[in-house]
Length: 135
Length: 135
DNA sequence: AAGTTATTGATAACGAATCTCATTACCAGC
DNA sequence: GCTGGTAATGAGATTCGTTATCAATAACTT
Image (tube, rainbow over all chains, first blue to last red; front, side, top):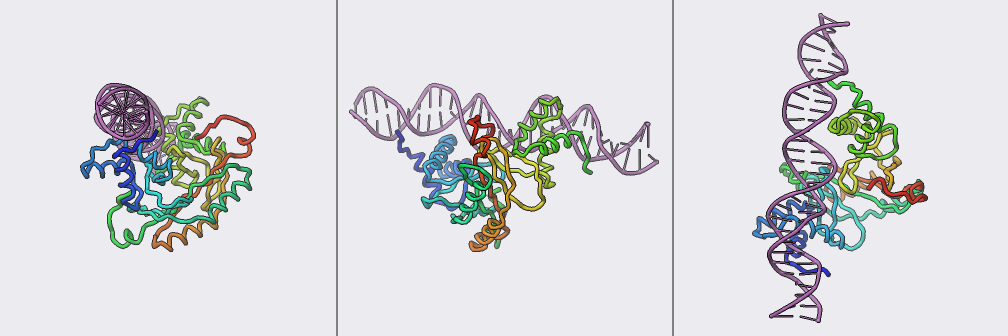
């Protein structure tokens, strides 16, 4: 049975408090910096659980690091992510879904799924010349 | 200046000999199994170079492993990949390119790029109940 | 309150990828 | 064909993200 611990809540709240994709490591050090005594392994476990339960979205950075973000809507969606700061916007991709299914079927592939992410530099990062915090 | 070594050629030929996405590690052990004495680090270096030069495409597996495949066409394209065996088909995605650019612009993001991959189970893998070789 | 057992967290272990550096061998110029 | 310089190699060490281990803890049920 699933138990309700302050650690899991802390991770959930930390995720809910930002619109950015963050790594388990950075989330852990943020919490520790705030005085929490949460362990790194627990953060990894909590994030994995949240992702399974659909409360968090995850994607892989260019460097192969797993990044997580609070999932605000129930239905399937994709993201437009700032390469510089990690800020992300949830986006619809109805046309792309349809295209993916069609392409799979045309080539005799079954059980299609897809990875669709759009990256760019957000307006805020584009205007100031700040150093990359993500990457 | 760039030199032409039998090691680089071996990696290039091994990639050209398959239509599948393979990892550096598996490509290395394949070559070793054939009697080659090529080193693992060299395989990593050769694959990275091929990817930079546009002779190979790369993507990240679910497990964060980098996979490579010979690139047969010069222009930008995407892939339909078999989750089971790694076999891949190059696909056009003109509509997707346009969609990605539009979505980025609508949200004030500049310098857009995108990651678009379609996964599925190819006809061959769907018919026989073989164990997954990729994953 | 007591017992059960999921959860935690420090640390070890793992695996992919990169770095180090002495050795090798490609190749341009003679 | 030699030869010198220097890019490339490869065994092993190292880095770094992530997962496994396992004794201690704490969240639920009764």
